[in-house]
Image (cartoon, rainbow, N blue to C red; front, side):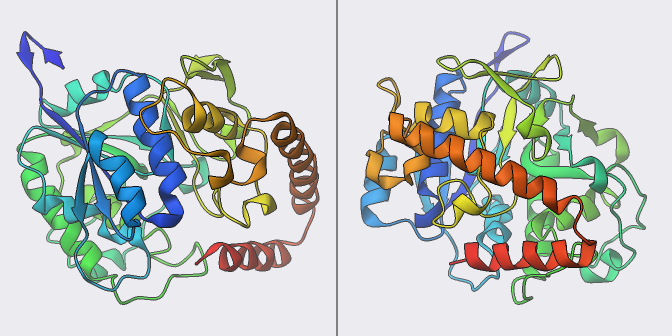
Length: 335
C-alpha cells in the first residue's frame, strides 16, 4: 500500500472461534475482494482443526492466551504480543468490508488512531468509574465515543496503546457480562478503549472517521448497489464497513429471532458461496436463510417480515419489558 512513494505495511487482526467461523470467512473474503492485501491474523479462541485448515492457506493463525474470559472479544488487544510494526487494523469478525481501507491505513501511518463513531445514542457515553476500573494514568476528558469494531493505528501510538488496552481489558477478564447498558463496562473492550482515548491518548492523535460504517439500526437502511463488487450505499453516501453488532448473529441457531433483509445478510451468501472467494462454505454450514438459494431467499423474506413487525411492536412496548425480552434473546444466543 503506497503512501508518498513508500510501502506502508499493514496487518489485519481479528478474533475467531468455531461459532464465528462463517463471519470470519466473510471477513476474509471481503477484505480480499476489496483489494485489502495486508496479512490477516486470526487470534484463535476455539476454532476446530478443520476450520483452521481451511483458513491457514490464506492467513496466519495464532493461539489465544489460555486465560478465562467472560467473552472472547476481551482477548482482542492481545495482538500487542503479535504486532511487529507498521499499521495495525483490528477488525471484528462480524464485519464485512465493502471498499478499500487504504484511506484509514494512510492516516494511521502518520501516527494516528482511526475509528468510526458509535451508535448515536452512545456518543456521549462516559463514566467517572473508568478512572479506577482501568487505573487510568490521566484524568478523563470526555469526547465522542467510538466503535471498536474497526480500529486502525500506526507507530508510535500502536507500540504502547495496544499494551495499555490489553492491561485495561485484563481487569475485566473475571467480571460477568453486564446485563444493562448503564453499567460502566457493558461494552467490555470498547469501554476500555474509549476510556484510554479520553484520558491517556492526546486528542490530536485520534481521527474520527467519516460516517462510512453501517451498524444496526442504520444497517437496515443500507442498500447493496453492486453485489459482485460489494458496493453499498446508505442515505446517499458510500459505505466502507458493515458491522453486524450485538447478538445473535445471522448464522447463529437463534439468528432467526433477529435476522432481517439488510445489506449484511444480503452480501453473506455472495461472500460464503461465491466462485471467486478464497474460502468457500457448503450450504449446510449455515442456516437456510443465509444460503442464497430460492428456498433460502424465501425464508429470509419471511423472517424479514416477522422481525420487522416484531420491531415495530417493540417500539410501543414499555421499556422495562423490551429490556427483559432483549436480555432473553442474548441469553439464548450465548453458547
